[in-house]
Structures are given as C-alpha cells and as structure tokens.
Length: 86
Length: 155
Image (cartoon, rainbow over all chains, first blue to last red; front, side, top):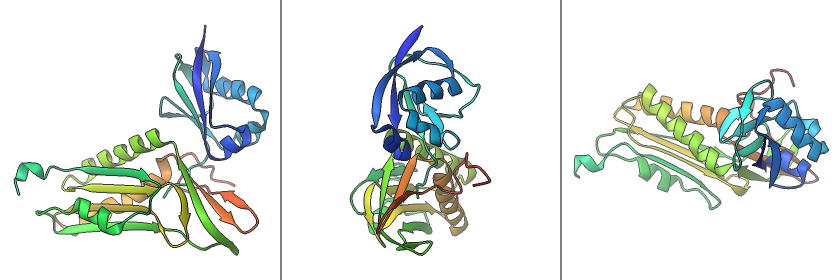
C-alpha cells in the first residue's frame, strides 16, 4: 500500500533538489533509510548530503536507518540538513 | 496588578523584521522578579579571513516553534522559579551587527534566569530547525552548529 506524503526541503537540500516541497508517493510501511533512497531516486543530487541529514516525520526527528515508519497520506517529511540557528 | 494575570508565559516569535531588545526584555518583566537575564546573538563581519556581507536565515517554522516550546517547558522543569521566557529569532536577511536571536528570562533571583538563558541558547543551537547562510563577497556557505545534536564528531 502506498500513500502521498509531502516532502519539504530546507537549506542545502532545497538547493540540491531545486525545490522546497512536493508530493511524493511512497510505501506506507518503509524504513527511514528506504525513504531516503526513494527521495534520492527523484533527486539524485541529494546523495552528496546523505551522511549529514536527518528527517523530521510529522515534526519528530528520525535518523536515516532501520527505523520503521508507518506513513499516511498527508504526512509531512522534512529533510533536515545540519542546523545553524542562534 | 491582579496576581492571577501574571502567570508564567512563553513568548516565541520567528520574524523577518528587526528584533528589539527593549521589546523582548519588557515582555518578561514581572513585579515579583528581581532578575531579567538576556542573550543577544549578533552577526559577525568575518569568518576565516573572509568578509561576511550579511546572513540569511530560514526555518522549518512550524517545527521550530514547537521545538522552542519544548525548550521553554524544559526550562520550567529545571528551574521552577523562572517566570517568563521570551525567545525571538529573526528570519531572512540579517545585516552585520544586527541581532539574529534575543532570549530573555525573568526569575525572582538572578541565578536561575542566568542559567536558564544559557540553557535556552545552547539547546536552540542543538535542536531547533533553523539554518544560517553566510554570504561572502564571492561565495556563500551554509553554516553548521557544532552543537547540532546529530553532528559527526569528525569533519
């Protein structure tokens, strides 16, 4: 089963992807690393930042790895490059 | 003043307009507090020998506000006597020497507000999804806080 999530791109990831948000079809049950790989298939230039980024899924931080996500249509998935606030 | 009106409050704002130290400190003043502690983050004009023209900030705004709310909640758990907390962060272009962040905390005595302000800025730098771009004369650079909670120890 698949669903449509909203992927948000920030900072360097927005420059590499060339956009700030889009709707992407992904499997509902997917590991965070698999989710990254789905997104890189659409925007191969993102591959260079793979070791620096984490996700925020529904505004909760998630590391790229084996964590199983259960996604629903309309969920927000944000690509979070290293932060530099303050 | 009616005591019930002076309940502890969090004042959180992300905005593109110039930040005001007067405005932020006045937000946290309270009649039963003897201390207001303040932190102002300003933009430096140089980095590794390069001249910085200005900074640009962007944020995952809804999540940044939530993460800042969590910081305020943590402050109140660690320092229960803290009264009001204000955290204002600027977004968009910030010219050199202007403030990018102002944090103010009030408490009855100074120790708690001084410690809480330190905790606020350190935790903001580690957890709040805000990004800074330094614009130089010929190039730019996305900065990375060493406090970033998932930063590699080796770069």
